[in-house]
Amino acid sequence: MKSLKNIFHQKRIFFNFNNNTNVLIIIFSILIGILVSIFAILFRICFEILQIVFYSTSLDKGSTKLEDIPWLIILLVPTLGGLVIGILVYNLMPLKRSTGIADLMTINSDSNNDYSIITALKGALINTLSIGVGASVGREGPIVHIGGVIGHLFLSKIKNNQNLGPVLIACGVASAVSASFSAPIAGIFFAIEIILKKNNLYVFVLIVISSVTGSIISRIYFGPGPMFSLEELNFNSFSEIPLFIILGIFCSIIAIVFIKSLFLFESLYNKNNVPIWFRPAIGGFIVGIIAIFAPEILGVGYYGTNLALTSSIPFWFCMFLIIAKVGATSICLGSRFGGGVFSPSIFIGAMLGGCYGIIVNIYFPEFASPIAFYTIIGMGAVAAPILGAPISTIIISFELTGQYEVIIASIITVSISCLIYKKTKLESFFKIQLYKRNQTEKL
Image (cartoon, rainbow, N blue to C red; front, side, top):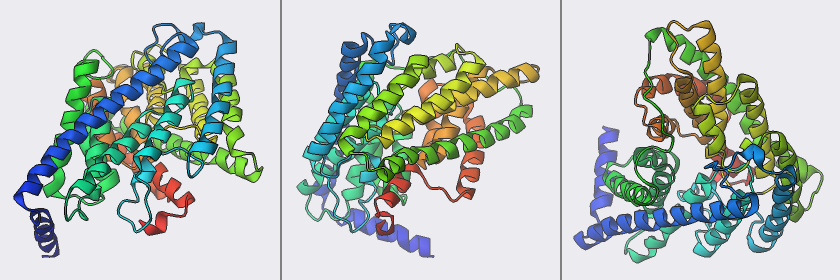
């Protein structure tokens, strides 16, 4: 009975607006999708240009083997770039840090949220430079943040708009994920899981419109098809289910280690009173040293992820890359480089899944699926608990690769990973960020 009342209440809220307003909101959801996808394209072009300038290649497309980049360049670019970024963060950003997804999650609270487009653009500049100089961070967090801010811009254009703030931000978030990954379904569910908190059937269509619009614009520019192209993979046998469960356990352990390390380096900086403006230079230098031995960890990391999906990395190096990426991303984010954790989580999960797939194919060759199959489900199972978005990460495993067969295995592995992770009382990366900023109690 209570749920029925809630449905009628939601219906009343939605239809309180006049017909002109309803049409306006639909138009705005389309415009949000267009604007956010254009920004996502420009953002990607900008940091790829910077990478070509500094490294003579895009770190993700791998037109040049990353191992061929001179070691001095790998060391100096993140270090000197970090020094510039530290000065910009200290002088441009109001809170002396870059922006991210956590900044959008307080929309349902009473806190004074900064949805200024100027602040968002400053954050976008920091994030672009960070990825451009090779910081080991994700590109999706910055895109999602500015997507939410673009959505919020339209709020002032609607009368009686107090109930639409989360909806318009969710439209921006959905189109950002959709445009970034070419994954419209995952974009929809990510916005619902992270921003809306409560499912509202009457605004679902608005989020769908923005997400699909973002995906269309992105595909027009980058081309159709999934981000990672693979031959068709088959789920060989239900005898593998215990193997998926074991992989889920390993993924949860890595996710726990990763989430704890992400906040370790910032604590060390704070404890030793290291100046904020100098932290990215220190972090860039350490990451440069790591990247001399493992250049795959530079930037977003999709070059390495693609190698893992094509089983082009030996077992021992996959293991090393897990440790290297966990350390490099933790150092970069702790040092206040701009960026997110989405792509690094996928990279780490891909390496772990690849290692596991190699072992399984050695010891259970009679029914084991291909190594790439385990690589894909590892991607989602590490990312899901860290992002706090299990549904969207299950879906994104399919949309990134076009491999529908991974869905069943992903559901099992992601569920086990999230269950164990939650048993440790840990929250998602974004909620821990808010807790560290003393905002969690206001959510």
